[in-house]
Image (cartoon, rainbow, N blue to C red; front, top):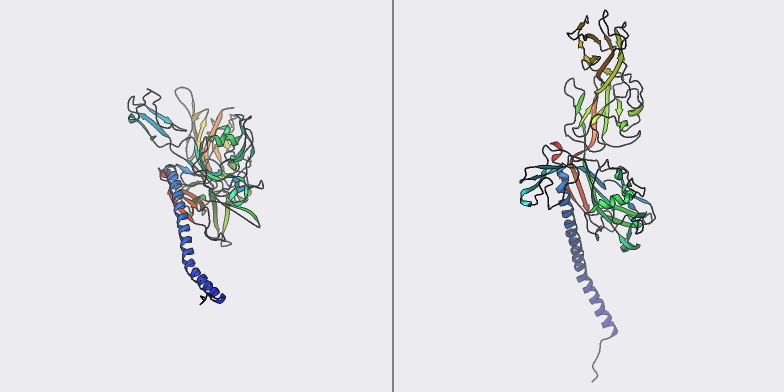
Length: 501
């Protein structure tokens, strides 16, 4: 007998059953593979974040101050030759000065800029025994004269010319995985320590500092000078930007960002004080030593931190009136403008300003009007300014005078020098000397005093990024979500510990 084979229907049925069973088995297998892939990516991200976080935690906590990183910078050039802008892609900090202590000679060598690398050698006695040399923090704690900058930039920022030994053009971003170029020129995280007063790094405030092809005073391009001292902190095969392309073109998102903690608070002033103090301490953003107006540091219309607002309550209208706003044009030309400055390191807004005036006596006039305070930039008179009571110091020919409440007198000491008394009218800005014996012709009358625009009822509030905490966000190079809506991030919060010392 002939053996009976499978019919076509039986074969098709068997194949259909096999496909169904295979599908049933493949669904959990696919899910498992996806979970494994995501777990591997998360572990790789954790390793990267751990390494970057460890590097930053070694330096950022010791900083005296940190600059606000929200101002966008140019992190690179896209394949179409356009600048790629990104906020929070740069962090500037000022770290404490260090010193080298030698146990052999007992000498201490401070390093206000860059400290030496190990192995150390004592510059005083030549000792190179590492067990008897200590690189330690200088006491008392003193800020270094350099700025340490962390920033995102292309690993190869420019086109190199062997003959010129310099860069001649700007490189673009390249990544063969997404069809950009034929090579790889990834974004990387850099660290660089520079002296802000060094003319070869004079463009450090520019957003495109790393790609500047202008010639510095040393004959090299600024790009050459920056790249020469910039140290990559991430490996060359790691791209620290998430890049994709759609109908709108290329998109670039840095996967390492620096975020300060933003604070908004109403400041308080001790009774009778011209100084308003923040309860949460130091401020990032535009740095001020407490002596300069905003318009002496940045041009009009510049929006940057801290955002300081002064208001007073208007009883007639029943509303708050803005007298000063560091983010509005009223800060520059308002009639109600309050003149103020701030100290970034102390978190202080101060309304007291120092002024100096010189007047010359004529031998007959014993009443002198003090020239009113004027705007240090425009020179215009400040109509709402007034002298702070009893803050003045008056000298005639360099000799300090004495303030009295009435009937000023003139005395002569044993050396024949005239000693003058005076009466001060603060409301009118008038100094009155002895009418019978006033300062003689061309005698120099020097008046120094503090003035203010602070009015009773003024309220001061400020919105600022605090340098007390810096959040470092490290993201995944690939997003799990196909629509790129849910990238994975690991966040490290780094406290700036030395800032308050």
